[in-house]
Length: 455
Ligand code: PLP
Image 1 (cartoon, rainbow, N blue to C red):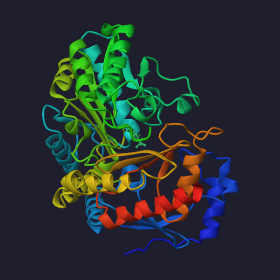
Image 2 (cartoon, rainbow, N blue to C red; image 1 turned 180 degrees about the vertical axis):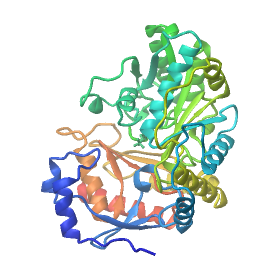
Image 3 (cartoon, protein in one colour; image 1 turned 45 degrees about the vertical axis):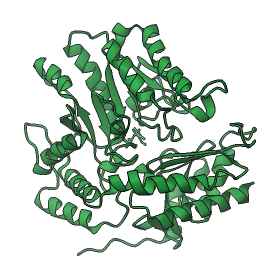
């Protein structure tokens, strides 16, 4: 067997500065930082860089590696599939066995009427597919004026033109527009920053959901195609909605007869203790996007699931939906995703997140809540957040540059061997679903040490 090529670390970092443009980063900082940290290996929940530093990966890559790193079983499946049929597309009325088997498996996990699955490569593409489908559905139904999609501020739905338009991040909207019209964004259910002193959880929940109904009425219900959101906003800072929020949003969607879409790119595949986030909140979306945990990031693959009534409407139009990617349903990626789901099932990782590691993370996070820099800790399943505040007991941030404190603490964590992410002044974490109690304890020890160092 061919072995992996070996590289010289210093040379790689020089080439990185000269040629490699990293995603979601300030390219001006590349040179001064001497190039990217080179990550060479992963095993379980740990990664190693080229200098031999061991880092506990509390981000699961980028909210992806549910089953952890180094699973030879997935490499073996990819190898077998590549030797047999590495790639063939699903155009021309063809499909490969793993592609069909994966669609059926996903439909089974979703349950209810979400029994149809379209494949893409990334979360952004899954969202693009979902948005096109929602609008095409209304066109097929003879209501083409229903093009408006209502999402939430700070929602993240990807980096393609469609994903950015659908997302509610101003920092992204400020770069590279103009964007696709007919996307509206309302307040996020972010209690730490937005809940008023005179509101309890229920009142805040009702106000946040009401913002959606108000926008719907303002736009004109007859123009609205869909309400769309992440069950728990991830990249926006692990925004866990208040009690009753999603049930109320679902009621609003049904009241006005608009579609309900869930972006499960982060929440899907066990992250919050059910296979999908919508199952936790007990709602029934019409369209669902998913990626990341679908293959634990071992190969790029994503999917858009559709309810029976959506597909029946489109089928009744008797016109081909001119939409698809060369790699839609890539057989090797599909085979790997199936093996990944097998592992999640076999090792009971969804139930473990719900009843063991998720509650343990919640408890462990509480141990940080007495720290002077910590304004709030929160978690759901294996998604966690630590809010950094300049004034204990408030949501006040350090003045001069929002996000600076978060970035300093994140860097201090990484130096100490813990990979966390900072969303402005919110530290977020999303460890692999195989994380152990000992590793969760280590996350907290390192985070406290980093907080102390930055105090
Ligand atoms: N949707 C959500 C909820 C996400 O969190 C992400 C990525 O983090 C995306 C969509 C985009 O996925 P990708 O980066 O694979 O395009």
